Image 1 (cartoon, rainbow, N blue to C red):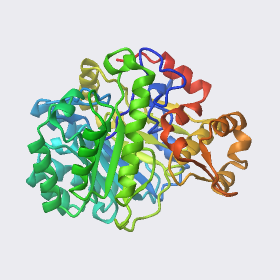
Image 2: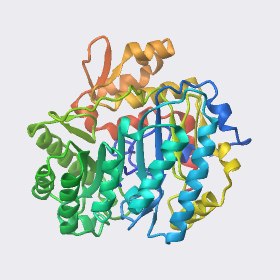
Image 3: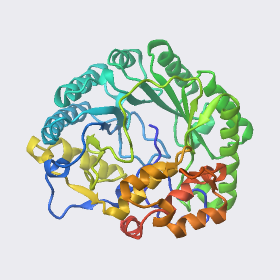
Length: 448
């Protein structure tokens, strides 16, 4: 498990907090609503540029549910449900592939969750077979990222991923100190983590990403440095540093500003630690080893190119609409949604169920967020060619607020980018650009 998205909290986060919301996509699925008339996928995709799509499969299963996790996932499902899920995925894949315009091609793919390597080795091989057969894509020819975990990164599973050409394996370690991992709600053992990392390095040629969390109860500068250094012993191509998020009025959340300050100190320590050891900052969370070669890949733009999502927790993106299935976090509702998904026939996968239609303003906001929250910032010429205007012209008050806070850097005439403190406050910058419409929908969402 890698990403740590939040559903709207039961209590509002302080407006001046640097940790208001992790913006990994815009808008969040809590802003999605059932379509009044379920549109045909063929209609949503008809006029899209489909020459460089992203393909994503969501496997909603894990061997355990981490205490910090707000993802759509179920722990230790019965084997018959996993089998039924894969059968439904195959029906969905073949139906969705038939709705895409002629010439659809994929520039990259990802298996996420949940934990895709919760599947057995033969089930992972089946996933690859179905994707390649249904969509006519050679997954060995494009970058493919796969999420794994210490308990499920076994030699037989890794052998399948290596044989099928996986180019990136991402593992959530969170802390190399067992007591800290347990405090964050992840009851893992260090020996299992070490074994998994050694197997990945011994049996695959894929890039390795290691996730770490800062802000755990009783974590300090010394223990944080230990986890950073231990991760670097495995020479990962990427390291992600995630701030711990909790519900505002529980546990650490009661500390308010003092905990925010603590997390910021640990963030800056981690950022500087990685930079000094040869890592380049890509975003607030992502750091990539400077000498790690980038594999050649077809061009893909997250701001403009579409994504085809499969599985009941996946979302799909077209220029005018994002869509998915129903969304929940609570165990009972997750199980109900999975049961509904596995019971669908092929024809039912030809229509979108829940989603969000993007008008011109929302497309501008999404493009800006997908660009501005990366260290390289946004190419204003690219923005202007797409929208016929400039970002400061479209959002003058928001950029004025960023200027007042000193969060923007001088990117020259052609770029808009965040400075060091702007990147450090990415989880405050992102929500600033949410539209009133999205804020209202998220506020109305009833977490389940």
